[in-house]
Length: 187
Image (cartoon, rainbow, N blue to C red; front, side, top):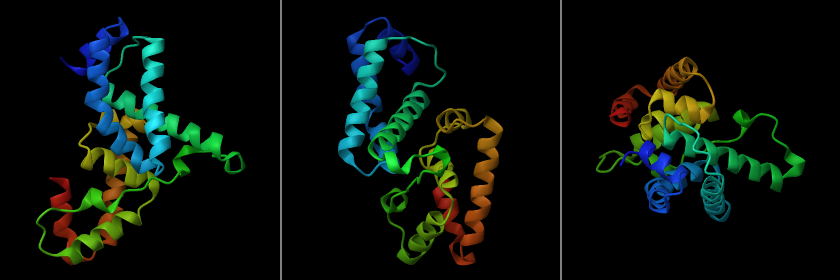
């Protein structure tokens, strides 16, 4: 069954469909959430709370991408938990929250030159948080522009422009000898 069919069945009270949705998307949500929140307890609780709320509400609202909907909902749930835990450091704009990409996300198996990998990771770490996030979602996770648009709450063309700008900035930060590594990341 497709995600949309499972979503609709779960909205009608089908426990098996709901369980399959949970199992199908848990690891993706965990990996995405770990880029936003390093506290595994908060992350796991947030994912569980998200699914509990979905089951209890059973809104059945139509969605174009279940994956994008769940990732966006988790993102807001995590940001909400940050605001609740840190009242002194109230976040005015979620775009300013740090989005971290772990080194493990970009290890390239079997790559002969570790120095090039290190330089690529350092260049990615120098990008602004929104640019790192768009690269992670579009290139590393392989999501469509529409899905990235939904998750980041920006319009389709802004996603395209942001990715283009991120890649331009990445190229500027890279030494010419490391540029071939970008091709490996994009494939």
